[in-house]
Length: 97
Image (cartoon, rainbow, N blue to C red; front, side):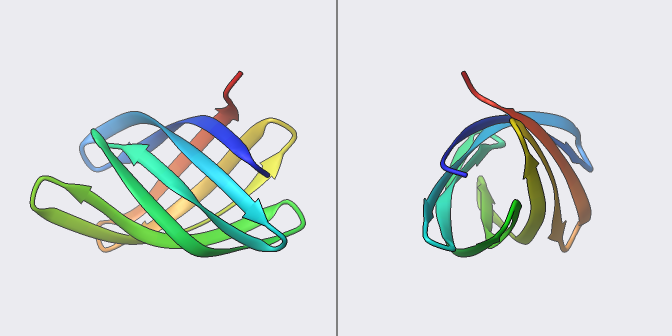
């Protein structure tokens, strides 16, 4: 699951583009979510098969938006949903070349 994915996230403000980078160590997952003009590091995630879950905060200006993201990797394709206080945000992406 290691690698970087180019993603789009459907937010209440419209579609946002960014990247997500995964670092796998056994069944543990860490990395960074780079979206909304910021880099947001996460750790303590888990992997089971091709499914993943991780939590973190998206920092935008003075706002912090906590989230929990759950998703799958199928080949080079990523699909996920981030659960936030603003609702569920759909994430889709492809492995960066």
